[in-house]
View (cartoon, protein in one colour):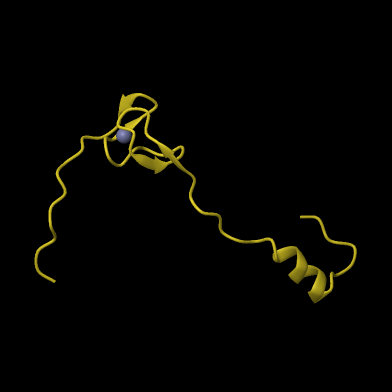
Length: 66
Ligand SMILES: [Zn+2]
């Protein structure tokens, strides 16, 4: 591990961290089912990724009880 030559002030550290923020998930349309989905993820609607079936899509069940 390298060591920094001198400590940075709180203001310098805070101003660097001012750009640390979460970004909204990029939505794209699925090439197969054309539903909006997160980019570079398996489509939750049809279960495909890069043109191949990754998992079988089951009917969503209503959660009963609590
Ligand atoms: Zn899809």
